[in-house]
Image 1 (tube, rainbow, N blue to C red):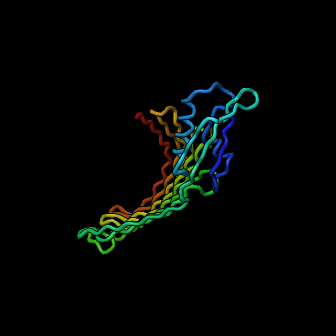
Image 2 (cartoon, rainbow, N blue to C red):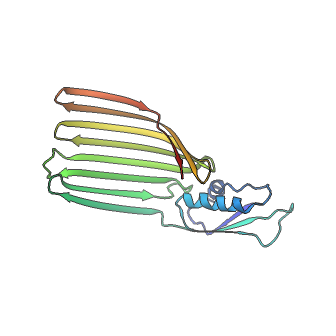
Image 3 (cartoon, helix red, strand yellow):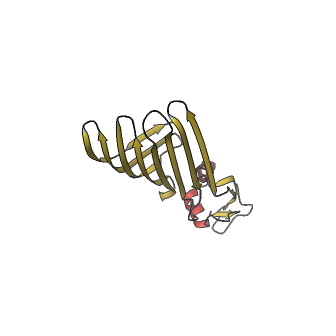
Length: 210
């Protein structure tokens, strides 16, 4: 039967149904319930997920599933600092939103400054942005996009860099995952050989077996 959702306050019910991917209309299998619960937990939006069979048979001799959910706090932030006698002070921080648009979209913005007062060159700066969306093409395929900008002041070179990458992650089975993406990066560097520019197109691919 259908997936009945309760307890959600920020997350849209239709997106919960899409992420769970419950095979409505097929013969009941407890493994399908386990997989739907795994997909919801994988989204990172919920702190508690309970899925039980409805107590009453619905029309058409179908059995609905009732999902009782508790959402995690949507925002999170963190910061850190590291002090080295040689490399100096490094500070970093990030801000994270687990449910940006009400559909399980995750946005993380981070920044880092290292080499402050160190003896290994100038300061290094980096700003990163990461976005992901579960169940974008189907229940087991997520979309992600990343961007990064950095300024490096190393002892032997300096470099200004920018990178973009977009890709998908496919959860083929509970043990196998695949990722495929496309990336573009650019850098302007200055070292002992002079000033040079780089432009790189990449096709990152990975497979993981647990």
